[in-house]
Length: 186
Image (cartoon, rainbow, N blue to C red):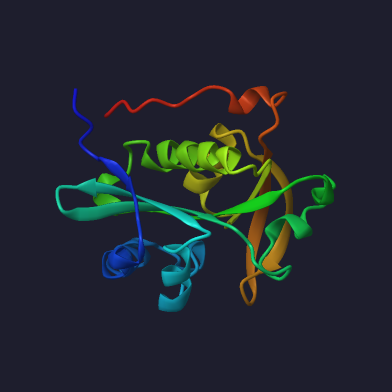
């Protein structure tokens, strides 16, 4: 069966499509604090090297986005906020964002693209991935846990938003991360 949501790497030429998707997702949320709005400049940065962004498509429309973010400064590095492991022993990247258009949710796109980002991070030599999610965002929480992330702590991020902090080590002994995810439409 052909995948109805082909997933491809994104680049700066996709900026307008990403901005449109972000607005669709934000407009669908019951609480605007569930997801932080990223600036046009931040999204453009995420679509460029050294970061890695994936998009899922339905025809010509971008319906999902996932971003692996390589921190360039200590202020951007989520791993430095981890409390339960010593991040200095690792090479860290951030699972910055995953958004799925409301009418395409329920197709495991968040997990599929998350797994693809984890594989890319590992390929690039990153062995620690940090992420945040609103404590009220059960979909992101469940997806991160299913990908093998561990809950670290709660903290204030992004100018005053309470977030749960997660981490994943991609070392070979991390058995929770060794099962690949395959696409099965529901």
